[in-house]
Amino acid sequence: MNIVELYQRIKQSQNWLQPSELKQMRLEQYKMTQVDFCRLLGVSEGTYINWEQGRFTPSSPARSLLLIAKDYPDIFLKNRKKLLKLFM
Image (cartoon, rainbow, N blue to C red; front, side):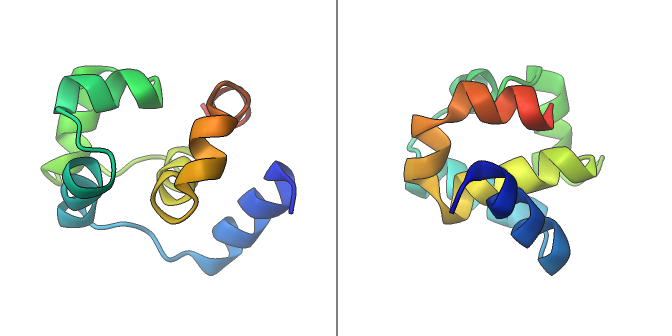
């Protein structure tokens, strides 16, 4: 499955992450601080913290990127730069 197919599949599912799931993914899967995870995602610290605390909802492309990071961490880490250009 290529990146575009993966994005389309995720976008169609509309199974978006809840704020508590973002925090859990960051801590358990990636074992990162908020600051380090922001850098990995290519978003500002304030933006990510607002997502994680439920103050703001990520855009559709950002939600897709977060789902790829959660469900397909190997693909995310291997193709991170390409994904950031595609989604952000």
